[in-house]
Image 1 (cartoon, helix red, strand yellow):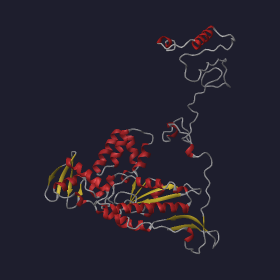
Image 2 (image 1 turned 60 degrees about the horizontal axis):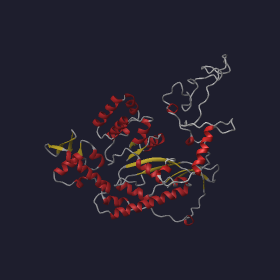
Image 3 (image 1 turned 120 degrees about the vertical axis):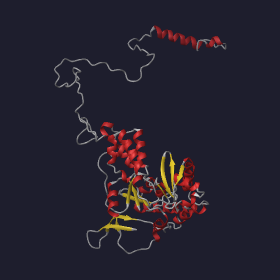
Image 4 (image 1 turned 90 degrees about the vertical axis):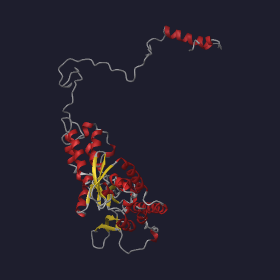
Length: 453
């Protein structure tokens, strides 16, 4: 743990809390030796009175689960994170989350073709596939293609990812999931929040260690599912051997070269994930070898057990903590909320109000959420004509049209005559029928029911 404070006004006075960094020793050590070299970063707001931010680093274990700690960096396109990563880790690969890129890119568009083309571009492993789908997007909508290039596709498309991390993720879902699991802890004060997160990590490690201990397979569950999927799809491949360890494999009309000495494939999937792709699986199975012999060791149960061999240790109660003899630290300054109506209670804006990039004559130049009076039609209440008001009207007065009654019109409207105190002929006839019906003797035959139905 590393704490940064703000110096007090005088020498020897109490310092004020600024920020802190917490890293569990067990997860830090096991991540260095057993986990894949990728870290997911995501920030979340603290919900307690003083407010603040919590930046969480999440790693990936052999079963593609949260390891709780975090050399590729995966985050959303938040300006502070982008600047910090390039400053502190200038040599590390910084990937952007495709979901955030897609949400900001499509905005109010619901064109399914654009969505399909975007995810095709994001999931392309080779530069050829990336160019092919990019050209299709350009032919379909040149404007959206131009706006997509501004987002730097080399940061979120798999075609430009570096090899060696054994991870093809371009989504920061695990970081989002971790922030969701601590949503209740973020409502607590600082110490209580840290204790809640520590206990959550301690319980998670204990459960994963028990699952890994009782596992009877060679690889993790998700790895076996991926291997079965690859083996099933590889049956549709065709191959042509060449001199040496290289084989040409065709799948779906596209051919790739598989090198069994270098353990590489032209589709890049094998090198990027550490699990043989369908082209490599076809060659491996055709040679009578086992697919499991060519999977990276980071996916094995033995490595998974090593990941959780060191758990987060319990902490004694506060009254049992040792005393350091140092001066206490003052809490951070109180931060009042912004005055006015909270932003999350705003009314829903229409499309013309929220689209700030298409400012027409009806949208204010200073505030895109407000409309101007430029295109409003003024109707005079005196003569009922347009383009002037009652104050400047010189025409004669015109009666307004009677307003339509509110609500749904009745099929059989009932008319009431309030001016006459005597009942009408229809009313008297109706009352006579009611008296006859109520005083008539009951009959069990069908003719007696005919008057009612």
